[in-house]
Structures are given as structure tokens and as C-alpha cells.
Image (cartoon, rainbow, N blue to C red):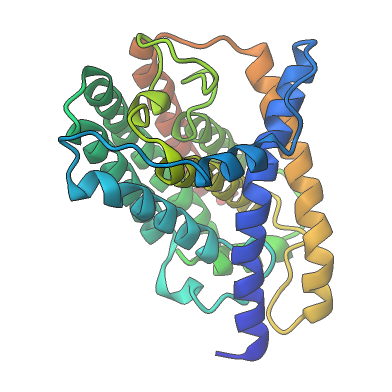
Length: 315
């Protein structure tokens, strides 16, 4: 492991831990502004994490070790996912150990742990949220894999760093296969991050909530880790979309100056993406839970069409 590779890997993890709550606060602030509200401020997630880490964790009498371990597992999976995604540089020592398929597996492991923890207490809300979460994961993962398959067919590799390096050097043009894959990825991102129109993170209505139903029994540092992990997941999906469809500005190996310039480029792209996410959420209405399978089936169909377009047209 080279010194530059270690530094870029460490910087990627630190930037993810720092920028993930800021991205969440940026989206919430713009969502409030677009609804003609003042908003809590972009630094509110940091205040919330600080408050929760200083509170005592209250556990149910029937909570097992799985319930206590799940927040740490979910948080660790999200940090590892952010570590293998080329957010700032393609010189990542951890990247060769895990490709795009393994990245989907990390998201699946986190989903399984948080769902099992929600059912561990035995409450109705937790079991309901776990069933809904597994339903969404069952439908979203094939669509996400199809998106990765489309980009891997173009770059001839399933490694995210190889995808970014290949796509960044292609001439600027609109490729139909990437357009279909990008649209499918956006739909999957809304579902996986519990955003409108699939879920509303600001509601606690028992008939509509998905993510919030999973974490109702958590408090203190456990809740802080889960909320931080949710912000990291949104950051990870945002960086995946930027790396695959807007790879310009990501530094390559042995380029320290480009790594410094990649930081403001990443912040700028995340700011634009956060605004667009808030705009889409403001213009959309939350759909019924029974319409979510149709929504994700459409995403899978678009991803498959992207692969077929690449096979038939080579574009």
C-alpha cells in the first residue's frame, strides 16, 4: 500500500463521515425552503447526533444481543461501502477487495441486521417495518445489480474504480444505455434511502412509515449510529451516481494535486444533487405502499432496457 493510496483512502472515509450529515441537512433545508418554510438549518443533523450521543440508551427487557449489535453493524457496513466507492480518487487500497456486486451485498447485510433487530423486540410496528424493508430490498437489489451490469459491460469490469477511470476518459456524449441506467438508479435511490415518493422520512404515521418503523425502539447512541448510517447511505448512493454518470473531477492514482481539486468538485456536485433531490421530493407525492412494487419493477425494466440497448446498439 502506497502512502498516497493510504492517504486517499483515509481522506475518503473522513469526508464521508463529515459530509454525510451535512448532505442530509442540505437536502432538508432546501426541502423546507421549497415549501416556503424556514427550515432547521444545514447543521441540524450534527446537533442531533451530538444530543443523541450524550443521551442514555434505553433498551427493552426482551432485547437480545442482536438488538444491541445491529446499530454498530449497520454503521460499519455503511462506512465500508463509502470506503470502496471512488468519491475523491480511484487510488483506493480497499477497492480491489470489493467490486460493485460486493457493494450491493454490503447494503443487503445492513438491511438484514436492521430488519432482524426491528423484529427482535416483538412490537407490531417493528415487524411491519421489517417486512416492508425486506420487500423493498427484494425488488430494489435486482434493479441496482442491473445498473451495475450495464456499466460493467461498457467498462469491461465490475470494479468501481475501473468503471470510473473508463467512463471518465470516454468522449462526452449521451449514451442511451447509461441514460436508462441512470434513470433506473435514481428510482432505486429513492426507494433505498426512504425518500419521497416511496417513503417520507419526516412522518411517523404507522400506516405509511417504513424506515422510521424500524428504529422506533432505539435511543441514545444506538439511534445516533443508525441516523448517521442513514446519512452515510444517502451519501454513498449519491457518490455512486456521481461516480458512474458524472465521473469528471475524480482524481486518478498518483495525482495528489487532482485529489485536492477533487474535494471542491465533490462538494459542488453533492450540492447540486441535494437540491435536485429536494426539488423532486417537493414536486412528488408519496405513493401508496402497494404501488411501490410497480415503481421498482419499472426501475428494473429500465435497467434491463439499458443492457439490451448496449448489446444491440453498442452505445
